[in-house]
Length: 459
Length: 45
Image 1 (cartoon, rainbow over the protein chains, first blue to last red):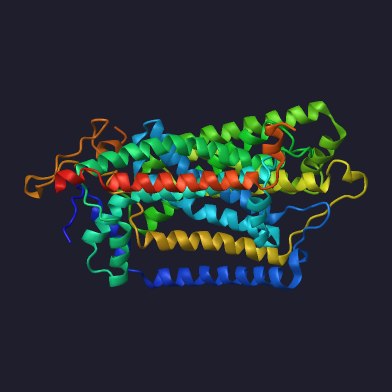
Image 2 (image 1 turned 135 degrees about the vertical axis):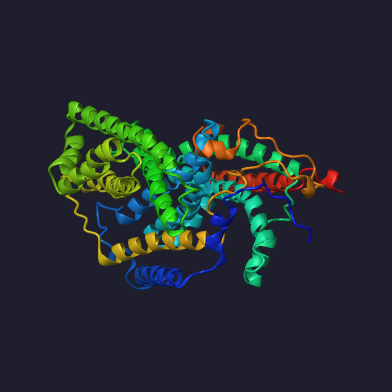
């Protein structure tokens, strides 16, 4: 088979080095994560075959708990890739290039766990087919399944297309890998040869898809929020819930990108490939998102408290001084107060501080999802007169939750051992083939007239 | 009953629309991938 032409990239060796061998440390990590995943499967098996949803802490009137919290959180996490790749691509932010794949991979691997959370919450996953068989357009659940399915599908395609030239590179460069792995590269590269026309069409397609993905990312999380917002329950029935969910999603997703980048940088010795300047750029975005989150929180809660409607105030009371007060105020500290101080005063040129802050943001954002969902159910409209709901998650729910996160980390870490986690063709130094590389048809010119290495340096 | 009411409320129609949306996306993505891979194919031949 003829080898393809690949744009020159002086970081190629560093980026490909994690793919050469799976280490014992990897196997240990994967083993532990797989064991947690297995524990989750067993727990789900108990819930599915033996006890039903009575294995959970869900009971009237609290019908949604940890599983739906996980669903919203995972869908939010998935916004990282689309934000970095699509929205920043449209904005012409060249610095995003080295981190696009790491961010997109978060999208790719967290979405399935979001969908799985829904199936677990249903108790009877087979009934998801009812949405297709009996689905009515007035149901936000139908909007949800349509938007999330399309988003998952489109994310896979967007991710795969941008990965294509690098899969071909693996096919041509990594000849010493096991035969099955090489065969996998051959099949997945679809005969990519690196022709000028292929690159041109690829960039056109990615530009076009970026517009579509941007629309989709806004739609998806808004529709997810409408599952709550289209009810008339206090705390949920607000027009602000869509933008609030969306902002939170991009906030937690971008924070997750910082964590992942720092781990990749350290574990795979990619200090030169993922420079500190990337973290500084993300830091500026995160400061904006933190303040945006504050704005949304104040707008939502101030409007609610001014209205002073009894049903709304009961839910607000549950959050600020009731059963969920500790979590509510802890969320404020974890999402806003401490991270903002770190981002402003400590985060510049300091990756450990950035990681600490973004870990806090993600824990806090998970709590925020819980705070949005559960307090409303414990003090619902109408039913409140009959019962006050209580929700305490059971061990089975916690084990399943842990297994979902383990599954995400497992898939992600395995991916980094088989595919380049930094896009080599997008960050190439030289986009012109050498004379001795002919006959290559033409050469690619960078659309912005600057080399990617210059962009990496933020020039 | 208006057509709009029937479209929104009849069980099953929503499922059909959802399937059509996802199916159409599948076809478009397949054609898009093929179009990219075939870029400059004639020149190479």
